[in-house]
Length: 401
Ligand SMILES: Nc1nc2c(ncn2[C@@H]2O[C@H](COP(=O)(O)OP(=O)(O)O)[C@@H](O)[C@H]2O)c(=O)[nH]1
Ligand SMILES: [Mg+2]
Image (tube, rainbow, N blue to C red; front, side):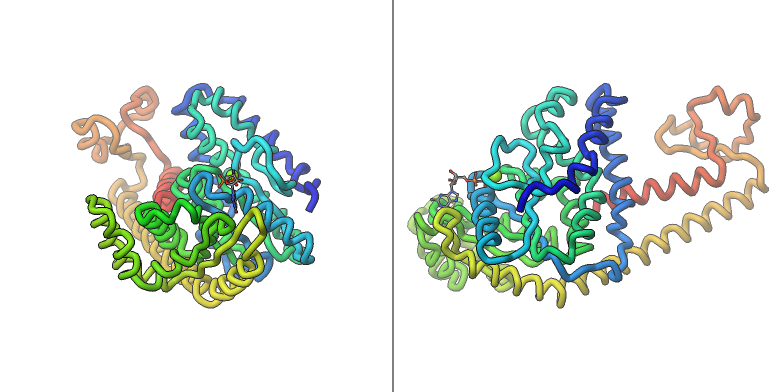
């Protein structure tokens, strides 16, 4: 799996750094533009309205997430090595802009597109802000990434995706959601949550990992595979036991009488349902143990994706589209009524952001053209502009869902 020249041709770097260099003069401006671009990308990717007709059964996308240091990158390296020896055709994507060296050659690397240190300097950000902003910038070009993979779809079995060290940067950011949804609406997508097994021997650490994995499952609504990593150091049998039998977990956590232990015990009851919904495998990124079982779990999850998740995704999309159309129709009716009321004459619409007193009279006011131009308390919109504005608001509203 050598570095793919196709990706280089995309000139992602050029466009992203152009965006950084040009009119971004302050944080606020930068963020606004970023948001605009993300919204635009979402439109381009057609995430909301993607039809299932362009959906492909292959490659299966494996998004690897997990706490910092759990071994995501090392595990990915192991998976890449496995694909080489077993004739599996795969693509590797690195989404961690801050990683210094990668043990594998990534076909698509965020670092080829965005320079994280430059982003930190230009936007005056700390390390986490820098990683997040870099990911946002990359997400604005994600439609191009998807089309590169689409072109290669027939030649690929898997796309392995490494995510930033700090889990929340990917799992709780708008760009993480955009990237995940873009994948999931085009290919079968499975999330792999990597657990640091030796550390998870502590019941409280185990519980924080499970809660995190659970929240990712419900947020992404994608099949999830738990990869208990580092089994060369500690076997993961205890974890399987805790997941199957909450009494065993309670017994282990009751040794400690702190508040967290009581909370942890209660949570184990809640998570019972969650445990039924996933597959878990023990792996070692260092020794290579469990990799075969891992790929089997991925295959089964991809099947499950096609059977359940895909249908659910289509249903959610159709429902969202229906609601949007309804909202749009209501807005159009409102606009028509307003137009009838004004009998075709220009009216001043309130932006809702300005001085209340002024806005209360704004709808009634019939203002003369010159006055409108100088008065920046009001925004005069033509019918067409009004409709466009509504659409934009909706995009932003959907985006924050
Ligand atoms: N013993 C052992 N160490 C591992 C294994 N996987 C990763 N590590 C170590 O865990 C540390 C963090 O790994 P890394 O892949 O950078 O974690 P990431 O932040 O999740 O990408 C490194 O020192 C790795 O050598 C494993 O399976 N066994
Ligand atoms: Mg890493």
